[in-house]
Amino acid sequence: MAEDETAARGAGEGTEGTEGAEGPTRRRGVAAAAWVCSVAAAAVLGAWSFAHADPGGQYERPEPLSDAGVRQELAQERAAAASASASASASASPSKGAPSKGSPSSGAASSGTPSEKPAPPSTVRFPDGVATATADCRPDGTVRLLSWSPAEGYSVDEVERGPARSATVELEPLADDADDITVAVRCDDGKPHTTVVPEDEDDD
Image (cartoon, rainbow, N blue to C red; front, side, top):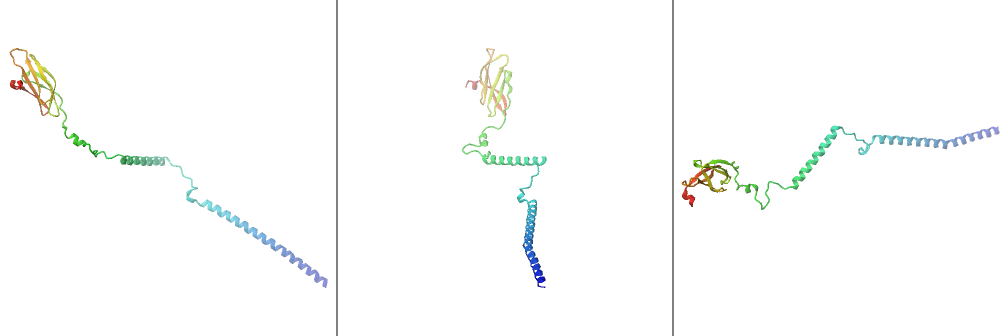
């Protein structure tokens, strides 16, 4: 009877020893499994964050421009360059309309000159057809003889062709008994006119 109790007690102690040895091993296995699960969860979370996060668009690939987009970009750049050039030239150059100090304006400088265009040269006949001349009536009212031609029976003795208020041509008849004739040419309203100068004025 005593031997049976001793055997039963020994068997119980062996069972308790086995259970005590298995406890630490099971806890280590559970801890390892929990660590593996946490590592896997962290990896999945990191992959999801990388796939859905785009800080500042640095991972975004720009799309290529179409032909219309390229033309639009070029047009905008040219317009900006032209605007900058125009503004720079406008700020660098002074106004051309204002005359410089000390120099008269163009309007004041041209006020003393006549604005009428000069009349073209014209041919005028002398009184009694003694000669013809081509006269130039100038804008300032003076006259200048360009050419002259005496009629048959006359020769040119002396010419004051101008430019002057009056140009004169002295004609000498070929006949000895005829007197010399002096003709004055003046311009009125841009056209030449002739008058015979009396002998007393011609002598003066």
